[in-house]
Length: 260
Image (cartoon, rainbow, N blue to C red; front, side, top):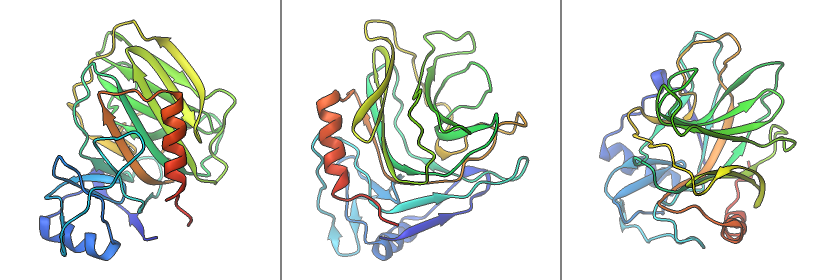
């Protein structure tokens, strides 16, 4: 399994289609999307769904996700406070108020007292705003938040509680939104749920880029870059997978689990 090591300034990745095709060949990426997006290292890059050998075969998943990810690994290296961030932009669709599921493999040994940082999302403000944010605290607790505006309209949040994911092992993480209800799954099991599925959902406008790694600008001394590795990053707009579907997705993901 190939490893893509990233050291990106300002979280921007710009590639021509020819470079994408070259990388696709070198990394043996075969998954293609019906929406003409190519999957690169678990990150979606807008390009023709084609490999140097012709059209790539469509990959399948148990839950029939419309956006499919590669088993290649993306590894982000943390930077010290105030330095350029280690992050990667993902071509994610606007989610609006619809249900959704985000899933990925993740590995980190991040730890520290009273510190936290981004795992993925598009949060640009340390308080309220329009964002989806998954963050990790130094004690290994994962949080998942959505917010609509600076007034905190339809804000919702949930955290992993006693489940810690900073043990240096690969974990399959799934985040779902169903109406106003958020859930977090770790390795196929729902470990936290908060909110009401009948409540209004935050309208996520995608006005800022969706990123793996840090999205929040430098703001606070305890907000740091989180070193971590990602694989099989998938976004499913319009559907919040249920418990059985997440277990099936996890079983499917285990067949191509990262091993490095």
